[in-house]
Image 1 (tube, one colour):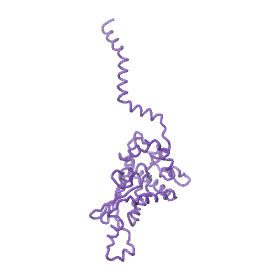
Image 2 (cartoon, rainbow, N blue to C red):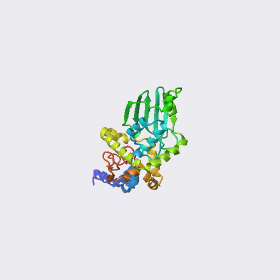
Image 3 (cartoon, rainbow, N blue to C red):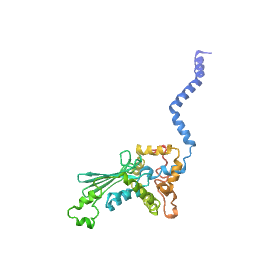
Image 4 (cartoon, rainbow, N blue to C red):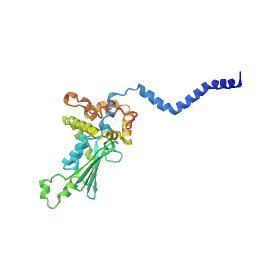
Length: 302
């Protein structure tokens, strides 16, 4: 046997050991990913979890055209806050903070993600609404960032009592007396809003609102295209953490079962096509055109 043959045989004799060592190294670096892939291969997500995760409310999406309408029609900030919570389909209440500006005010709206019943920066920002003089601008945030709308704005007409009160200028009454220039959702008012929303969600009005929300989603998707789809995948770290925590709790299915009749995702799933509801082309679950499931895309990788 030549020396070159001996060297070749030596290499081949070590090959199995090399494969074993190489495989071990690959397992160390890719073990978690392989384990997750294997787990996902055999895991079948409960339908209720899929519906909840893919719903607009869970993403923090809200019908901002209806928010604009509510603002234009509301004579005080509490009435506006009530209507915003009737429009929103998420798990938690939307809380407001109105900040005075030199020539008007700005309202921030956040979903109470941390459920501490007060407005704070641990919650998820849905939109801002600013008034400067007679000019208003509504800007979506998070999943709503595609949206921006401005218009000439005048406050609602004064009541007879306000017109007769010559010592108190109407703007002062409207601005301060109705909360626009200094308001945040008080803890004492939290249960009232929650009770109102619970009653509303059991009514036919909520089904009608969901149909309006669906029409809004489909319209915005058609209007903004890829920009809209990118926006609804723009989920904050705070929101991702909320979803992950809820799923990891272990009793997610029983929680969702209890919420089904009073949640946006549950009512959506119960409305039949015979009632004139054609469904959302955006938030319909894993098979929705241009949207799909959460795993492996931006948004919720859970």
